[in-house]
Length: 220
Image 1: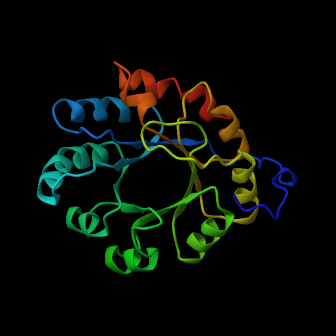
Image 2: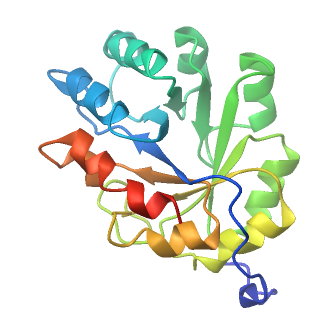
């Protein structure tokens, strides 16, 4: 965490619109998962879905992505590919999410075009977020705010980081990491534009109900 600024000096910003959900896929997106995704997308204010599947060949992943991409389009949910600019281009995805080792956002912009949504993992770093903004990213992702088994992380940014970002930048922020309806309120209050969630939705028997459970807290 960059430590040269007192983040408590930045009060939570007034909300101009409610926070929204950004769904992260589980590893297994075959079988009945398309039906579960459709239910989740119908359950509440879902803005985006990120296809995050590791160690699967591009051809197979493209096959698995096809029904998911159609479901997202039907529900006006942005379909984002994790890590791979090439796969995002191949699928005609709405965008790509890049980790710090996944390439330059400027390269992604040149490859995917001006309308692509390009996100960047920034952990707990103000410096990385500012770099992402300068590189033309459409959102920055901070976290993990809470312990998570989806993508374990030793980074633990304070919610005030979201307030600082809202005060100095117009680029939206995504809060990620172990977020549930029970612990999301401080992140929404601090100014997160989106909450990235995975297990809180996909571990539930009813994904629509799991998404609906976030609705009261998303309003701030």
